Length: 506
Ligand code: UN1
Image (tube, rainbow, N blue to C red; front, side):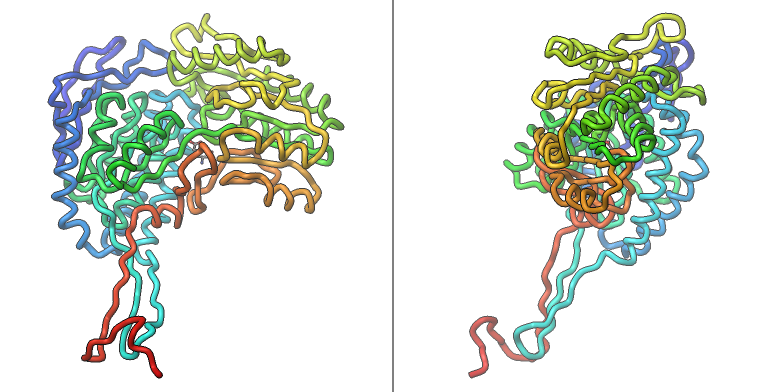
């Protein structure tokens, strides 16, 4: 059971690891604090700083649980998931508030984050009665051939802080409906939302050992987790740098590995666009979640005929966005997640200035009055950005939008595709021919027409091209593909030895 300690402002609860259904302390004896980024005096909770031995215990628990869980009929597993989704509806408001406290994004968005987990739960509960395989004709008489899906085994999930419940749900729900058992390492900035989510799974009836939590730092437990021989699949959402390390480690031991990494998502605004719609979309895509989405609209590529009008109006509105503590319902943009992220944002602002882009608004840290205890930054807009500048090429993960002029559709697409990433993309136009060309030619995993680059729905594949990942997709049927192994089964009912490829009719 949790005990209480004195935090900086109040009592902060101690959260333990979940191993084999028990809440246990890390063997290291060390803990770390989960701090509210809008008010660093507020300690949201104290969490275990785990080590290798904790990972090993969690993997062993998952391995044992797998022996039974894989044999539970998928529709029964799905009923538990359905119940969990229903319970999340009841707990939505509390979990959203916890999430805003630990992560900073505004309440409207954290409610959306919990909702995304609910939606995923209902979808994956349906998969319990689907998980389609294939039956195909055999080339031999009196023989039956089919391909069925089996669980992969013990899976490791390494999840990010920007969607602290939605993304864990994208991984855990499909994994467990397919019969896998899991060890999850939540982001160190937002472990509470994973604890809340997994507590709901337990309350809904997920048996002990099926899901285990090991909290801590990637530098210490990332390698023991990804290198563990009993782990058969690793799913990571994080930076491209971490993705490269995890991908290499998985390749060495032939593990299945799903990487969802960075983005530098373009939104194209053509001369014929509904400008009002594009402005609204650009603000939401660029500054929603404080720009801290892999799908954030970090580049807006605007055709010359509407460039000046768009830039003027966009800056006007960006300047007016209300920044503050996300628990205040009138606030539109919360803080950066932590000091390091704020420093990264500020350093990119300096880079943009030195590269010669025009800083039209923002660019400063907010640190007085109501902002003094948080990691706040002004919404920042650069215009006249050259597509080759670093601020137009590298993922910043903050409220910094680069506006790039372009001549025509083909030019816009060339700029859009000219970055190392390929997650999301968007185009605003009223011309159906140009919209279809963009759908075909934008080299990204997601394209929106007349909507910004954020806002993916859970039942469609989510992921991207190039440095955004390694070809796997989360969401909907893509996730079931990742968490199942194909097995081809042949049933010969001829009562004689039949040789494929050899016994052929004359
Ligand atoms: C992410 O940016 O890391 O599409 C995930 C969206 C959300 C998920 C974003 N549904 O913006």
